[in-house]
Amino acid sequence: MNSEIKQLEPKALWANFANLNAVPRASKKEEQVIQFIKDFGAKLNLETYEDEVGNVIIRKPATPGME
Image (cartoon, rainbow, N blue to C red; front, top):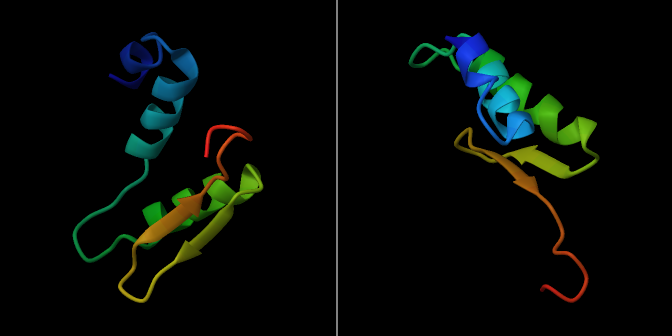
């Protein structure tokens, strides 16, 4: 299935989706997927943090002139 997803366009988007989908994330055991998402944001040098209830937030500034 992941190989089929990675062939969809735009490839970069679907490759990221397939990588996320490959991370185990059973209910109440989301530690691995939380870390995956935090690492994803950090690799892009984006502000990335986890709030008090476990949501992961990634902030990307607007493109200049598109605020």
